[in-house]
Length: 135
Ligand code: ZN
Ligand code: MN
Image (cartoon, rainbow, N blue to C red; front, side, top):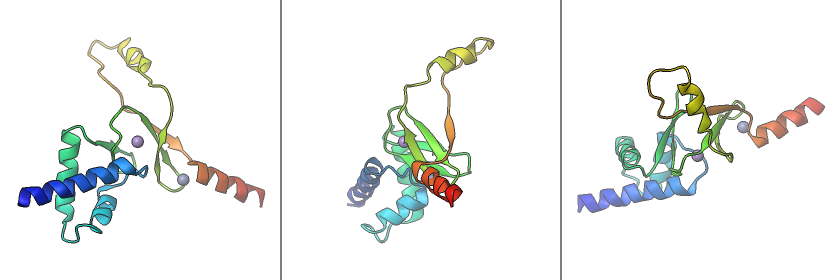
């Protein structure tokens, strides 16, 4: 019975991750799933998130600001963190596979991948700063 309950909680976390573009932190996931499972603990949320990451059903993003965020989109893609509001957004762009080749050029070891995080302003913060600049 307990196992069934736990898998339902995990399913609920997974569905939330797959249906949001917010790249939530564990705290945000906790706030969300507590609406359906009021007795769930933050520890359980962390355990489920770790499990989903280990199973390749979600990815963990290390965001430079010290926060870790979760993404239900597991296909390779890139992110931008907004300096204005702190949101993490998906960037629609072709993969930068050639930078692995560039990194390998003068390196005797083996380059197997890369982590790229773009910094800047999201569309809303960009608009807001343009409005401010005009007034
Ligand atoms: Zn922003
Ligand atoms: Mn993403």
